[in-house]
Image (cartoon, rainbow, N blue to C red; front, top):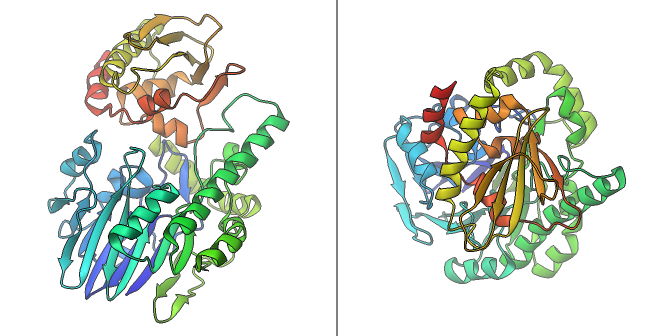
Length: 439
């Protein structure tokens, strides 16, 4: 087996005489024009790689299976993925030019060819994401992408599938929290440090649960390159070196050898890490990201402009109609998930209109105009971005993971998971097509 790390969560695997491409990311930027690949990708496009026999996709996020990335894949490749309740990934693949699509149920091991097996592992708390286990040439590899499991779930995986030889483990989360939330500089530093620690804990828990022979941190090869956003890089997520340092003692206890790899490096069970030096000179620090952003400023500006829908001037009445139509469908489709939610949520346009949604357990959510002042959380964004969420493929995940959503949280308010899952998991493609006619 020979594995090439493409950067972020992308792997190219040669095993049992076949080739596999896992979670490719070839088109940038994603998340509403916010995320670019960093360090500069050594294999920037599908054309820079051999054609894979199989493409394995863990979930729908655009840095793992984006529509424009899928466009660049050969139609001859067989695509494998796990089905999820929302059907969003299924719709994306069915709309693509890829026709050889195989859906594998959770834990259903499939032999792709003699000596080559694949298993999709579900999230143990219901998120729409999966891990991928590839077995070939007597080697078992775990691809964790965005699927951090609990320690008991990792141990269950080993009981089901056997010892892991190499684990690629996530170590950093990403979202508008905490940089988009109100708070003093002191509170912001405290929140950022806590989020970094939570990311490192993901990596450590993977080692403690899987106890793999070897482990490498990955799935964080990205950066915000918009000049106004540069200050947010690495303030709330650790570097791979920080994750490795924190994991040294747990790894020793687990009998796990830690690996430090850079995009473009290779690994085989016989040779271990094969250094390629393809991203040499690009450090994992804010100064290096800024140097890259300024060197690529023209390309970045053009890419952002192409990715974002220009703010379309719409009247307050039109925006209100769109908001009510959008949320009427969203709230109805997500009733099961918010059935026990007790919360007052506010939505506000920068310098403009506002709305309020009240959730009471056992009752239908109530939508009203304006804010009262006792809302648990108030989400603010520009009129252009709100209109784009309503009427284009853009969605709440774009502004959330794109670090552009501003949130005011009432003092003492808790974390409302059902509320955020309601927004971030909503598949609004057909609705957006209808609402675009309002403008």
